[in-house]
Amino acid sequence: MRKWLSFFIVLLTTFAAGISLADGDGKMLYGKCKSCHGAEGQGNPSMAGAFKVGPDILALNDGKVADCVKTTTEGKNKMPAFGEKMAAAEIKAVCDYIKTLKQ
Image 1 (tube, helix red, strand yellow):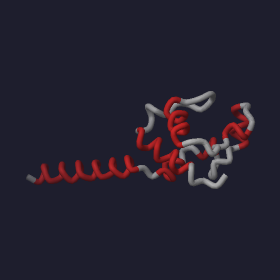
Image 2 (cartoon, rainbow, N blue to C red; image 1 turned 60 degrees about the vertical axis):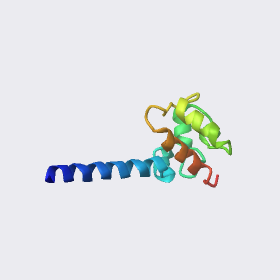
Image 3 (cartoon, rainbow, N blue to C red; image 1 turned 45 degrees about the vertical axis):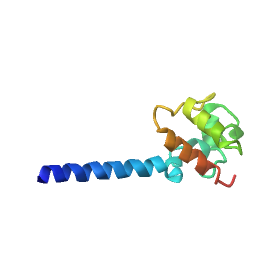
């Protein structure tokens, strides 16, 4: 009985963590994007130099969330695809958060 109880506690904890990630903490997930896109979406000049692109290329624009989701999922130019690394709900949460940044 104790093994089953432990199993269900682990299962519920895992499920609850999955729900919170699915709901998405876009700000937390965006932390992985900062190295290229900057803390406020302004673009990181040193990364732009490393990629040999203008800093404005890494700046996040006022585009539509759907465009952000597509680019993040599929990649574009030097932006790698994250569709196999992140759940769709996580990508959407990051893109929703990006819309809140003051650029």
